[in-house]
Structures are given as C-alpha cells and as structure tokens.
Length: 198
Image: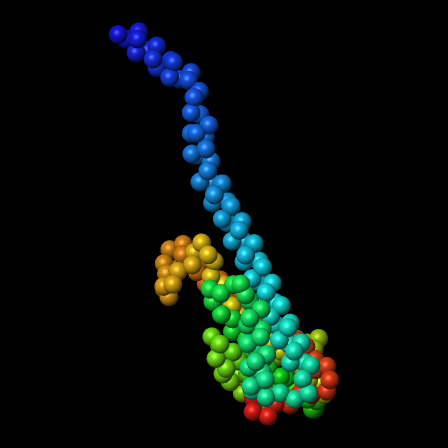
C-alpha cells in the first residue's frame, strides 16, 4: 500500500498536464493589472495635455478680441471647457485675468484690469479689479498688458473613480489628482483689451 501511494505521488510530481493553465492563473492577474495601469497612465497624460491646450486656446481667443464683455468671455471659456472631451468625469475651472502692468517710481506694478471665472459651467467673478497680482519676472515689463489663463482640473481616473465625495482607501488617494496650468499671452490686435462688464 505504501509503495502504491509513493508511486502515485511520484507520477503526480512528473505529470506536466495543466501546467500552462496554472501558469496562466498566476500571470493573468498581474498582466491585467499592468494593462489597466498603462491605459490609465496614458489617459492621465493625455488629459494633462488637454488642460495645457485649454489654457493656450482660451488665451489665444481672448488675445484676438478688440474689446471683451462678460458674455463673450463666458462663451470663450465654455469653448475651452469643451476641449476636454471625451474626458467628462470632472469639469475644469478656468480663470481669465487681464493684467495691466504700469510703471511708477517702484518699477513695474502688475494689477488686475478685469477678470472672469468658469466654475462647473457657471460664470463667476475672478480676482477683484485693481488688486495686485504676481507675474513671472521675465514678463514684468512696464506699460504692458497680459492675459493670464489658469486652468485647474481634479482628474478622476477610471480605475479609482467613485461618485462618493469622500472615498477612502486606494480610491480616495487617486480619486482627485490635481492638474493645473497657467498660461500667459499678450493681446494681438490692440495694446490693451477692455472689458465693459467683467
């Protein structure tokens, strides 16, 4: 009886049928995880590029205007918002700030000329008029005008996306990845762009 049992154990150890199925069972979950991580990384990188393009496009459209109104600014920002398609798990916040840089005895002083903001598709007031603002030193030249577009997006990956506000665990860590871009441009047609009701 012992000899028969030992023979069966030896035959079982030498039997190679089903090895491929066992190897597949070990490797398949790892391969699937790597695949989904790769797909999500590519989508995240592409969404980050879209946030950058959004800022550049909005600044370019604003810079081509003679004058601006709150309705026109809202329309331009809504056009910018649509450039995020097909991504639709969250909406970007877009802030357009016109900056007048004047010269005085202290040097170049940048202040807000007008501004507007688009939050969740609704137009709102941006930074207050005549409030001081910082600009990069390379752009801080006296008697000039700048358009600054700030685009912010809370990126929600597909693999961790949750409709709950306060998700926990792995979902909570990756549920809202901040993507920000600041883009500066100068007016194209006039030296300054005025806005009547911004």
